[in-house]
Length: 248
Image (cartoon, rainbow, N blue to C red; front, side, top):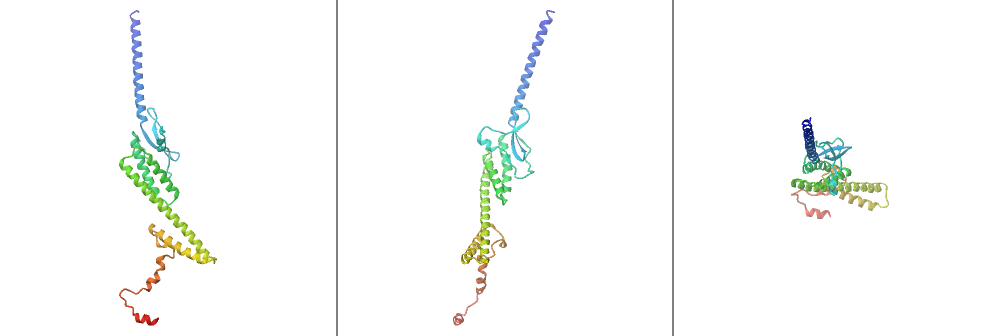
């Protein structure tokens, strides 16, 4: 009995030591897996918005990415989708640089799609996407060049939209002056002067935009010059000055 008790005690100690070793190793593995998962990112759609998620500090699972730095909070905040039913990449990124570059590739496409839109809301949405792309820190040099081009193209698109709005307002004013003339305004001379001036300006606005002639104002400088052009002698025709003087 005296020999069995020390053996039993040693066996218990060995069991406890092996249990501790296994628990330590399991904890180390769980910590490493949690740390690896913490450095994973993905894009997902939640309640109609694009959400950037980061892996939890657990072996599995994701949560909304909420960085501590204020500028990064703005860079990775949820974004409104350009349209219902838009899909996003299902890839899981193991580096934030890869996340930034994939996010930029998606945003740049959304920006260019919005540039062709005529509404102010679409243009503002493109501007939102552009500002978000400018905050991403992990872009490649080529993507930064593309970002600069996107900024320039969006400025051009906004300029052309504003010009179209100005031209539309000029057409509305022209309609009012025409109505005033038709109804017999006391300021008929001024109303006709404004008609001619607005027709000239609308024509000038429409030409760079490549609009069809039918969309321009009915009376334009080119139209007004047509009768004078028709009266010009054809090339090579000799005019009898004597006959002209005699007719006077």
